[in-house]
Image (cartoon, rainbow, N blue to C red; front, side, top):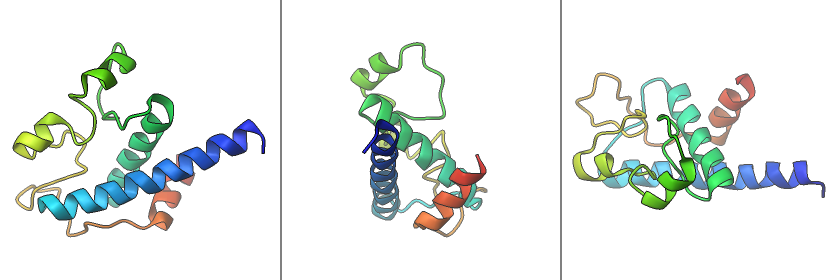
Length: 120
């Protein structure tokens, strides 16, 4: 197996792991994915990429001067402190039912993730 195949497998593994995490966390916290599931897919893809690159699911929706330092600080590792403390998700991955952008879904299929991923 060459390094590209190895990297793709790692990404697939982390994409599946982040999908499972997001679904379980949404159900556990009573939150919902964005009504536009492409938003959900992009965020899950970003979390998986950060898990690949940094070893942790650092919030993909923020700018960091030093991503490695942010991972070590853990504040923005998903679920971030604002989400855990106040159910405030900057990424719109986990939305409370009173949020105008909240959908009804707490699950997303690998097919939906792949469709968005292939369109990027």
